[in-house]
Image 1 (spheres, rainbow, N blue to C red):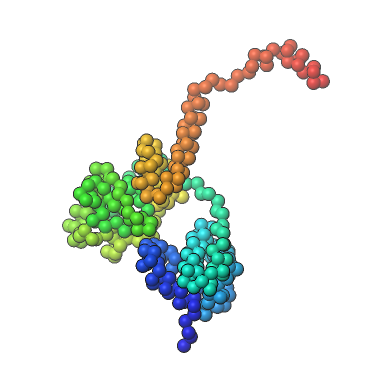
Image 2 (image 1 turned 90 degrees about the vertical axis):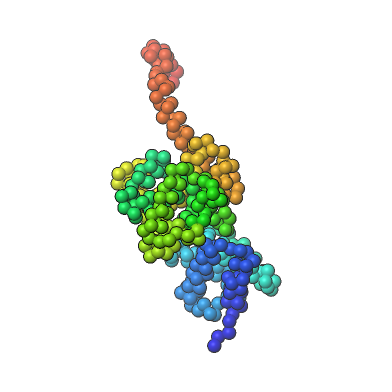
Length: 342
């Protein structure tokens, strides 16, 4: 029987004790970091022929980590953002190791010094109010499935929720403390309260009533949305639902609803519409659950683009057409001017 390596020892402590207990990491963080180290072990075995049970801290040099990051891009076809996400997990682990065992501090610092790769800035995808209206009207409201899907998309947009926040939404989070609020639990288990319009609340009330009558007894501790197997709705399930109706809406009007729109695009759309409605950026920061208002400032740049487009459109209709100057019509003057260049 092989003796456990120092790598496996610290990795176990990291996931079983440090992340959940000391750091209080969320389930999403735990899952993301777990995937990173599963991929790292896969790289060590496939690229370097080192079995996972033989990986040691001495073998995990900065060159090996850089090779792993390059392998993610070149072999698995991961994006630069995904590469940087995996690097975050690697850095977090080796920062922990350097604290637990100072003997490895130098090698850990070399790994921590690996820079993130610059990624091209993506254009934030969002829909206009008309595009949102078309998308939310697409599901067939005459069927229970259609009503449920329409509500999921409506609630994502109305609250500017992330996917994880919607699938983890429980009945007790709705009408929080008896108010027109929904409590969303976001990154790092941080919660925020978002107000709901009366029309949206009416849709949620009707959905929960139907669920209670037709499918299940609804309790406060239950998740609001379940899949066909009566299990918690998954991230993949939400993505599937959105793609389904984006495809339908795109066929009706590809300009209003492009195929590229994502679930996060609904969140961006709501933020832009809040800004256009005159809501202060400070409040938008809180509604989105951003730590800093600087993160929310990206929507100001989007809104300025829209204003510039509107300005150009108005200007084209308002300003007089370009005309010749008076001297351009004086042919004798033009001939005289030309004589200076001959």
